Image (cartoon, rainbow, N blue to C red; front, side, top):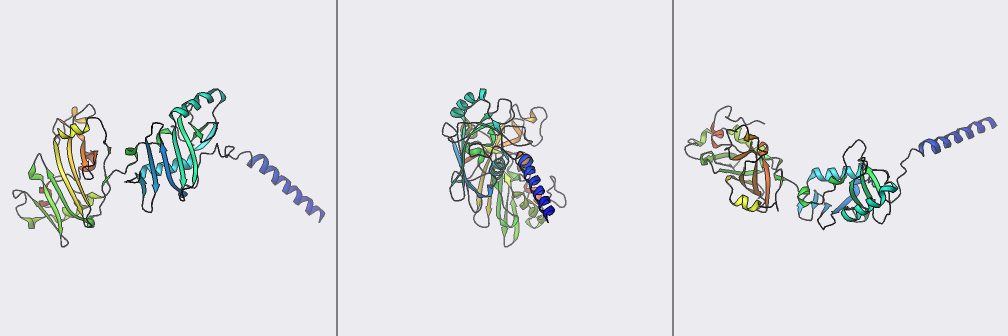
Length: 347
């Protein structure tokens, strides 16, 4: 019995030593309130406020259906996912060195981005400030509110610094959806071209039947409609996004007013949804690929890859890509050809 107790005591002693010298020593030493920049329970985050020193800010709030930006726009899912991953993965690497501490604090005081994170009940989880790249390029300088010690924070296996992830610019966070309708949600589509009106058409759904109207010279016999092509076309209005917002860009209003209109597109949903899109050619520029090789479908004066568009009841000016919208820029004749169309419509 005594030997058993002795063995048991020795095992407990060894277990304690293993914990103290191995497990405990290898745990993260930066878990105090002023050095822990990680949020593991991102599902509990209800609100994030990000602001610059000059007053520009974004407020992202969780709702039952999506993240809401500045109480008026749907937030871009890619940005909110990136933010959740950043808060979950970022770790404190080490305190800023004594020699760099003073300059780092001065920079943070003047230029840092303020980040406030709250839970679903509106209670503060963390408030910290994000600076620039650490002196050795190994991470990002950050400091907690009311702390006197800045730290270098990083994400394991990520070589960049984290400042850019904390954007305080509204247009970086705005959802870029132009259309997102399932085929059976679409009531009508009007595609009106300005350079060749004979390509224009109107597709409508009437009593579960699709009808495509166009120039009489093109649509001579409505009963010859290629219904397969019409049905496939309806699939092209799911997850259609713009490349980015141009609101506030210097000279954009005058450029649009004096620009050449490409087309107008109207899409109406079965439940009253409506999106009116005015599309303008983008003037050719030094980035345009067709400066070197012409595109047979694009006049030489215009960019072959991108166009301007006005959406959301004329409130927003955006940039769109030909690559994304080319499947929508169909011609009336394509709905009245048998078999394969000149520009094949595919699932």
